[in-house]
Length: 186
Image (cartoon, rainbow, N blue to C red; front, side):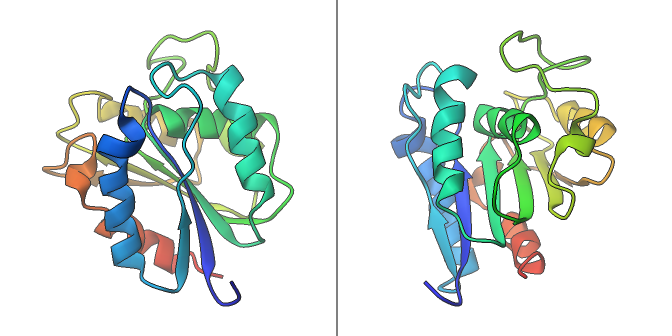
């Protein structure tokens, strides 16, 4: 697909998240971005019980199929697992941007979690030329909005977008996310 920028969107966790929740976010993103973008939305294995052990190989397989200049985005725990996977093993292709949407921070100050605790030097471990955006709704009742600040602490280069009146799904309106992705087009 020459001329299109690829977006890999990693879903959040929970039974039905792919087909009943995050699909609305992906529809909004696709609509806002238009035909110049190819949004890939793979189903993660065992979505009702998200696990780094199960999801990271699937995420790496999906990233291996991307072209240089792609954007990777993750919602909720999918964003947390995506960040851990990127920190552990950078992708082979150059990324234009990394986008977190309502991602819980697992580590010091955030949620406990031995399986995929994020490192304190996360920003240094990410691909150096990729822009990092952290989006969080200020009305998020699942992952506290303060988690965006925890990401900013460990990823100093991140642009944090705090969205008033938005919930964990950003009210199924990813226009702000699309606008940021458009500014990251190579």
